[in-house]
Length: 302
Image (cartoon, rainbow, N blue to C red; front, side, top):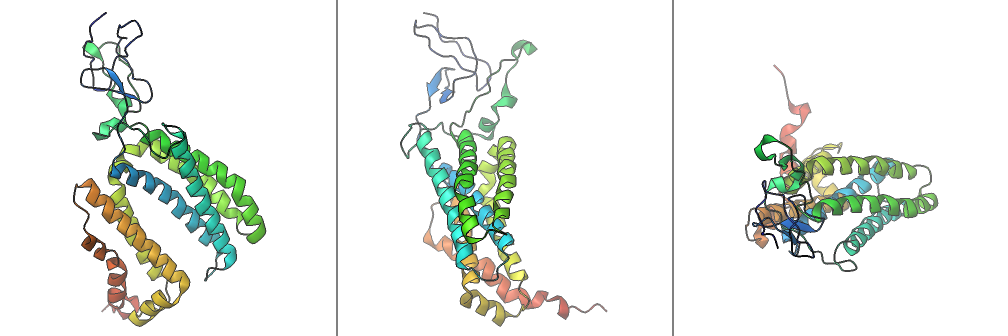
């Protein structure tokens, strides 16, 4: 039996053979990760709460883009039952893809997953950390060190496209045959874009998605109010509580804002206190209270 020798680099490891010997240094198989002794050990960690928030963000991002594209192609001031039906279809597609992805991830057939704990940003980019002992031949140790957070998202996107193509055309044909088909075309564009962004920036998204959520919810909230023709405080406030579509959009912004606050607190290791969620309505209230000071008709250039 040969002794376990340490491997160069931080991701190269050795596998234990049936005869008791160790392999040469290389990439650990999928579902394994090297330990401090350079032995490939199976991923047995449970995902952290932040990991679940990250996976939830990737699913929510797809769902929000679905709903946004449906609204854009429907061009309805209110929310008729035809548009609601397509929104529900997008929700069912996203939830189904998420649940099936969990079922297909080890352990298969369970809603729990086994993972390797994310320790640093470089865990997402092992390709750039292949060592070159003595500056000679490089050891190729590229692997999924954050198993299964990286591949799960690709599986989810693939399932999202397939389930959408199975369900959405029938719903669109029945409820909104003319404009509804464009929501399918839009999804066939943004899913590959999401996959490309995840492939090259998965680690950056993992550590920055709480801030992305907060920024996007604030900007979307401001854009929603900015499109109102009447920018008086009274009109903005009344439309926010009397129009069903406006109420739905504002509540959606609040939910995203609260999600981002919870994710930032988790990332920073801060205990989540209910008082934090008092900040959720702040962007909407701030816009309504300050809209009159930014009315361009009241600006006079001398």
